[in-house]
Length: 86
Image (tube, rainbow, N blue to C red; front, top):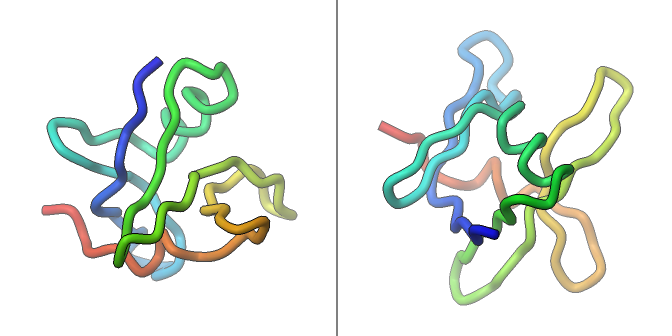
């Protein structure tokens, strides 16, 4: 099982809070690929910002599945604070 640190994201140009891709050192996956990896338990993903570790998880929303970080027992939006990939 690979443990991947997410260091950047790509957002949809029309909806600035809709993540389309996530990236890190030597990898770049679509949101759907990351969801599939997490659900199949083949890869894990996390952020590390300011020394704070947060696990990326899958959440079921009104318009489908999406990704969110989880730290200290709380869901948060750390992914949206990451820089753009590129």
